[in-house]
Length: 200
Ligand code: MD6
Ligand code: FE
Image (cartoon, helix red, strand yellow):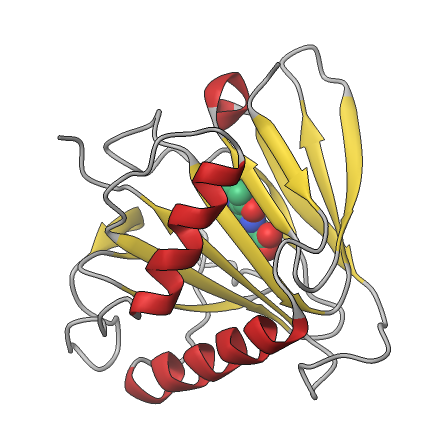
């Protein structure tokens, strides 16, 4: 096994609504912002964070920071419901629970996407990443070290976990798809990734 898990319908519509409400609350305190590559090219998504650490990217590089890039305020705390979902997700995959110190919240508007990348900004590069999605269906591409690509359709309520060998593999969001019904009334998609950034 490569440690990659896709669990369709891991959480149900009431929990999807609860996650949407969490996203609204976090965005009110820490508004969505559009990161850029180091050369200044904007990414095709906007993001915010909760937790002691928040992921950010601009001309100064990809990194975890303690403050929102424009407000300068500390990121809001991670709601307990989200931490409990992360524990449940790890347990359902037979993985140990971990100390989560970041939740990155990505928002994709219609037509947005995320290029192939490896998550390696974390100090702890072996801790699993737990990913929960709501809203529009998305095509997720995972590429193994031989270059073989697998495509997964990630729907609202699905869980993805990258652990073990797959933790360091390339992946991206090729596209989001028109989806009806969609709890994201703008037709978009929201993805929450829960991470252990700091090593022990
Ligand atoms: C997304 N997810 O689903 C982007 N990274 O919008 C990721 O880039 C990701 O789902 C690491 C582990 C799980 C993921
Ligand atoms: Fe990623």
